[in-house]
Length: 185
Image (cartoon, rainbow, N blue to C red):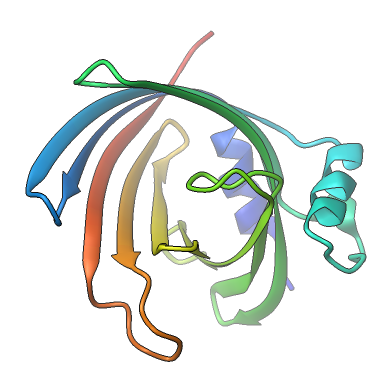
């Protein structure tokens, strides 16, 4: 598997980001804007192993070469609601089909639920888009990060009401869009 491009993607993500997002709550026809200050750092070997252990994930070969990060963010909505969180994430590629890598995406703390979680990801080297799919208890979140250049990302978040097992994702609860710009300092 060729990890050079996804490694470049994550190297570009290291640093401070200023994020403007708009969320569309489909179920109650509401639109919300928010601002997030986001910091992404590399992940240490000890934290890589902790993320695996927290998720009860089998040991992984070459764990120190796998893409991952630690992040902290603080979000304030246009209603004045504030949320802060820190977490660590590790990406375990399992397959490569042409320019697309896919595998598992592990976090020591989920966004929607305060627990470790294993999700899936695909990374398309042809357009530098990372797509992460997380099945939470009530929703399935499909989150896209498109790296436009080393200092700009476009984010798309689709949260679906969690369907019955084997059914399609077709009932949206939330749609989010964001422009993410790297800032100095």
